[in-house]
Image 1 (cartoon, rainbow, N blue to C red):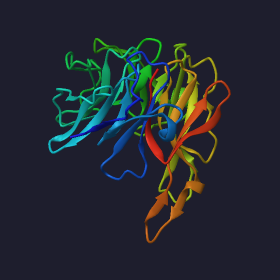
Image 2: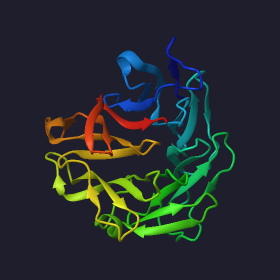
Image 3: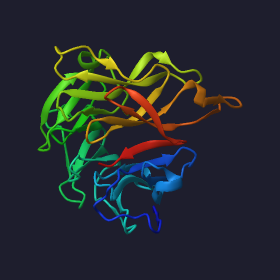
Amino acid sequence: MSKVVLLAGLISTPVLAETRYAYVPYDAGEDHDARVVTEKGEKEGLVAKVKGGNDPALSPDGTQLLITLFLKEGRKLAIVDLATGEQRQLPIEGREVYGGSWSPDGDLIAFHHLGAKHWKVGVIKPDGTGFRLLGDGLKADEDLYLAGWNLKTGEPMAHDMKALVQLKLDGAVAWSKGLQDLFGQPYAASDCNFWVLPDGKTVVGNFVVMEDEIKDIQGPSNCLMKADLDLEAGKPERISPKGLHVGQPVVSLDGKSVVFTGFTGDDIKKGEGDVVDMTMRVYRLKLEDNSIETLFPNAWFPSVSR
């Protein structure tokens, strides 16, 4: 059971003046304690600590935190009210339900859902009603992974590691585009994220780059890329520098920046045997000029409110 520690004097009214961030300290171990902070960070802007707050996802207004619970029967989703500390589990059937994300208007939650055999994308309202699986018409024997949101239409994005899929809230598929055609790359890992910006034309996401290996990690790293949904409009662009691994990217609701987990080769230290000691950081990339700044050291699984 997760617990919230509310910090006197730091809990705001539901109408928040500041943007809030959530993350998990990288050194928190298996029993993760999520932090909710303002941009000032833990020292000056700590709002709450949520014990066991895995995969934290802030609601757009910054007043609620969606987390993944690790239970005997599998992973489940719960919502924590940051003003009261009240926690309630969402009533979703499935072997594994995790990695939830709020719609841009805060009226819906999308998540990874494992049924009898395959991964699908599910949605539910924050009050626990309206559960359904999306992707009507897609092959039932293939996995589909939640990727992010279309910030113009308010609909979830998904991928099957070969194609990017725009899902409609009635369950149908709006469109599907090959990742090779969009990004010039043939496939993505299951945990890669993709977001359509508010212009409805541009998609940003992290992608496996086979030739961009970082010393002392097994396999290739991920970079951040930007592409036009109109395949004739131009070539895809890499917007993160070489040597910086990009994981768990989340685009701000205004479409101006991306927060993500990252590390470089300098963050990795070889320990005894196969042990690797490393540091994770939460970065922010401004899409206007692709400039990057460190938001929070020793942190991962970032989320951002409005």
